[in-house]
Image (tube, rainbow, N blue to C red; front, side, top):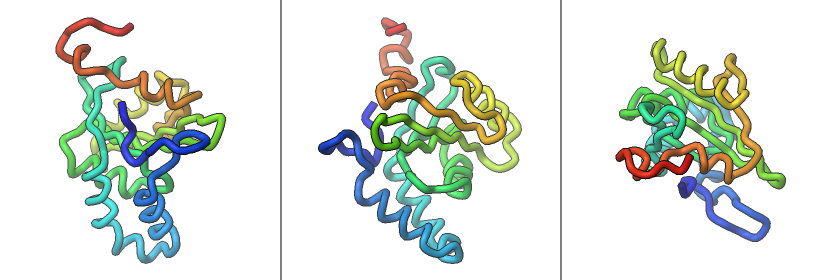
Length: 156
């Protein structure tokens, strides 16, 4: 898995300039976020990856590195895209823990239940459907590869 919006740099994985610039712009003025929401969602649509969770391969996730973006973007993406859940993550500076937040379309009871279940699989918060992983490697290991999805050799 090559996380969207990340590129390697000295000292580890860093957010790309585009995702950071868009996030900073949106956070400068709360009233501007309403006007920026369509642009933020469009940017996110173009940069996310669609993945399947290794432990729940029937679920389709839109996976996106989008530091600082809130529930509005996550919920809008979940509503507009053909995915079950949206996972917005960010990697903190060393020790490089990965914070993940799951979103569903507003009013999606089945999606909300799946988000809570997935968060609890990784010891996360059911209230916020979020969890923290110890490393980027652990985050990358969450997602099933193409061979696993086709029923090929499993890496378990």
